[in-house]
Amino acid sequence: MARKPTLSADTLKDLGADKLAQLVLEEAERNAGFRRQVKAALAGKSGPEAIAKLIDRRLSGLARAKSFIEWDKAHAFADDLRSLTDTITSELGPAAPALAIDRLLRFIATHEQVFERVDESSGRVQDVYYQAIAAIGGLVQSLTAPDADLLPDKIMAALGESTHGYLADVTDAVAPHLPKHSLDRWDGDLTSAIAERQAEEAARRPDGWFYSMTSQWARMRQILALARGDIDLLTALEAKKKPHMQDTLGIAAQLLEAGRNAEALEWVRKPGQRSLGEPDGELSPARVRLEARILDAMGDRSAAQTLRWRCFEARLSADILRDYLKQLPNFEDIEAEDHAHALALEKAEPEGSLQFFLDWPRLDLAAKLIVMHPDRWDGGAWHNLPKVASLLEHDYPLAATILYRALLDDILDRARSKAYGHGAKYLGKLKLLAREADPIHPDTMIDHAAYLAKLKKAHPRKSGFWTRVGDDEPETRQTSEFRGPVWVRK
Image 1: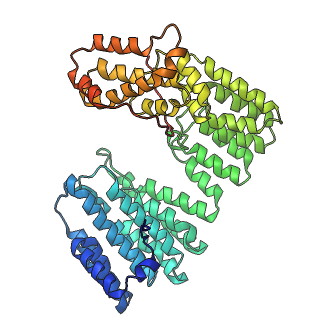
Image 2 (image 1 turned 120 degrees about the vertical axis):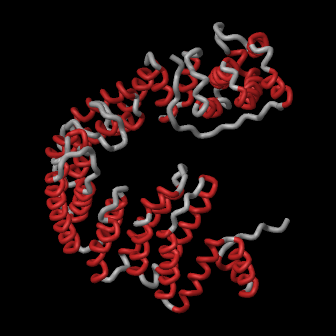
C-alpha cells in the first residue's frame, strides 16, 4: 500500500515552482484572507513599507466599517481578522518590528467598535485580539532601544482611554521586555494622569455611575512595579483598594517569592478576593496551599501540616492531600493515605468523595462508593455521569450499571425525547454489562431482565424510545478520561 504523503516544506518543494504557483493561485481565488496574505508576501519583495501600505488599507477599512455582522458570518469574519494579524506578524514583523507593532496597536484599538458590530458568542473574534496582544509581546524583543523607549507613548496614544481592559493586557505583554528607565518614565506618567483624572472626577457633579480609567491605570502601575521588581509599590497599590477587591493571595505569593515570609503570611490571612481561582473561605484549597507553603518557609511545619489536613477533611482536595503526604516521613504516608481514603468513603455526601477518588485516581474506591449509595446518583447530570460510567464499565460493571440506570431512568421519567438516542445506547450498555453485574448485585438491586421489564411496564407508550432500542445494536465497551464535578440526587 502506498504511503500517505505528508505536508512539509521539503515535500512541497518537490512539487516544483510552477505547480506550487498554480495551487497558491487557485486557493487565493477561493479564500479572500489567503489572497490578501499572498499579496502582502508579494509586496514584501518591495520592502516593509509596501507591506505596511497594504495593511494600512485593510485597517482603514476595518475602522470605517459600520455594517452589522450576523452570527452565521461571524466565523468567517474572525478568520479574516486573523489573516490580517497573521500578515502583520509574519510578513511585516520580521522586516520591521516597530512598524508591525504600530499596526497591531491600530488593530487592537478597533476592538470596541468591532464588538458592537458582531453577533458572536463563541469568543473567536476576541481570541484574535488576544493573539494580537501576545504578538506585540513577541515583537518588542526585536525593537531597537530608541523604538522600545517610544513604545509606552504609542500604547497610551492608541489605547489610553480603552475601557475594555486591553490596555492593561498590552502593558502586561510588553513590560517584561522594556528597559527600566522606560518603565520608570511610564509609571511617572501614569501617576500624574491618575492624579489629574481623579481631580477632574471629584469636581464633577455626581449624576450617577461612570467608568473611570484610573482603576485600569492603577492596575498598569502594578504591572510595571512587578516588571521593575518593586514589591513595595506593588503591595502599597494593592492596599489602597477596597478589601473585597484586593488580590490577597496574589500579593502573598509575590511576597513569598521575594522571601518576605512574615508579610506574605499577613496578606494570605487577610479577607479579600482570593483571586487564585478558588471560592472564598478560610479553607479554600488555593489559600490553604499558599499559606501552608508560607508556614513551611517560616519553619512552622507542624502548623502547615495541621492546616493541610483540616482543609482535606473539609474539601477532600486531592492536591491538598498530595501536599500533605509529601511532607510525611517514609511509610507514614501510606498509613495517612489509607486514613484519607477511609474518611472520604465515610462522608455523608458522596459527591465530593466521588470527585476525590476520580482525581486521585482510585477507580476501585470510586466504584465502591457508587455501590454504597446506589440510589443517590442524579441521572440528570448528563454532562458528567456518562463519562464516569464509561470510565468504570470495563473493570467495575456493577458501578457502571448503577450510573447507566440512573441516566436512563432520568431520560424516560422526564420524557426527554431528544435524548432517546442516548437512552437507547445506555440500555445497550446495560445489556452488555448484565452478564458480569447481575451475579454480584446486592439484594436491594434487581437484575437486568427485571429492570427491563420494569421499564416496559412504566413507559409502554414511549414509542420513540422503544423504536430506537429495536434498531440499535449493543455497543462495545470503551473507556475515556474524566475530570469534572459529579452531582448527586438530593
